[in-house]
Structures are given as C-alpha cells and as structure tokens.
Amino acid sequence: MNTHPSDSTRHEAPDRPSRDWLALDRQLCFALYTASLAMTRRYRPLLEPLGLTYPQYLVMLALWQRDGRSVGELGEALSLDSGTLTPLLKRLEAAGHLRRQRSRDDERRVQVHLTEAGRALREQALAIPPQLAAAAGCSLDEIGALTGELHRLRQALAQTEGQITVSPQCPHPALKP
Image (cartoon, rainbow, N blue to C red; front, side, top):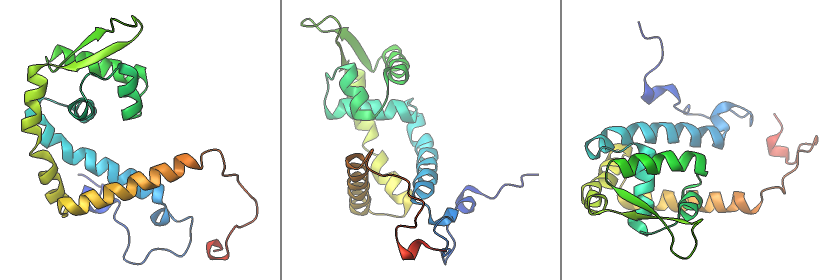
C-alpha cells in the first residue's frame, strides 16, 4: 500500500503560512525546488513522443535559439558543466539530432550544429509550451510573466553572490519567531 501523499498534495503549501520564517512552507528555495520537480515530471510525457529527456530538450531549446554554439557556450547557457553536457550531446548526436565538429579556427573548440532531423523536431516541440501552461492552470502570458520574475530573481541572486554573510543577530524584527 502506498503511504505517500499524491504528487498534487505532497508539497502543497497550507492556506495560512506559518509565522516561523524557518518553517518549510516559508522557504522560497523549497517552493522553487518542489515546483521544479513537478515541472520536470509534467514534461516527461510531453517529451516522450519526441524521444527526448528533459535535459536533452534543454540542449535542443538552446540550439533552436542559436545553432552553431560551442560546447562551452552551450554549457554556459544551460548552467551545465562539460561532464554533464558531453554525454547529453553524445546521445543527441547518436539520435541524429545534432553533430559536433572541431572549429577550423581553434582545434580546442567544438561547435554543435543541428541536423535536418534536429531542426524538424522543433516543429513537434511547438505544442509543448501551451500544453505545459494548461497543465499549470496558466495562460502563456502568465507563464511568460512568471518566467520573467524568476530571471529577475536569478540575476539579483547572482549579483549578490559572495556578499551575504551569516550574522548571529536577527537582521529584521519581522524574522523573529
């Protein structure tokens, strides 16, 4: 017998959040983490007909946006290190979606190009964003606005990296239990 709550209720925030700022339901990091897990689960059945995993889909999105990127540029765009990215590229190349080739100008640089099959896959993928928005109960405009806010959050966190220090004193009266 399955004793775990269903995916839809397992990490659902209560109607009235706790006043304790260290409570799990108050943590932005946990809300983002569980939303990411749920999002990835929703992508699986949409990507299966395309023969792609979620990480492979991200690689394809980056190449559909700008074909011919170097492996380093792809890694930077996707926030993936080469140890994670290289196996993804090998599998996508074996599936016939892309090809890797050394740069003529710099032998150390490997360029990644879509094949005809990889470009054609984009047409099938066009159905994914509206289906995902519907699954989330949002319009495409709402998804776009939320995505914009998350980009803003990521940039703000990146700009303050290394600037936040732990203080034994409570920085704000509202954070006191």
